[in-house]
Length: 166
Image (cartoon, rainbow, N blue to C red; front, side, top):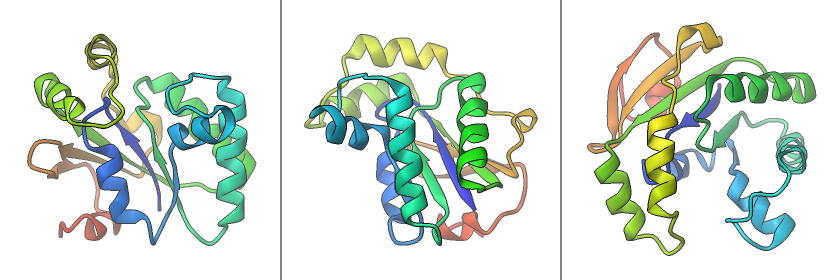
């Protein structure tokens, strides 16, 4: 099952993605920014990042995809998943939505080596669109970013076993 992580910086997306490093092809746009332009912070052309992400996923055809990015907007998520389906022929997605209070994200960010500016996290917190079934996910997992566990889910899925839920 392919997975898309949805949440603001500091919500725990990359920390959770570590649990999947042996089972999934992890695609984090920051790592491609560093590879392409020498900096994880540089917001270069998205099309170049997408091409790199697809190339990596095609190099690991036996692994499902895990997209570790903020993915704040419904329209952008739909575009991203449609693009991956067309380029990789991989279908079936689980969304994990990181429900994280702004103060928690800001506190976590303050302890990171590479910090996102606070005003950016504040702006992103206000922009996040909660994922819905209308986006075509097989499962949506509402992840509690404070206690790092599933709050709720809209369907049953084997991904839950990987997260330690039954």
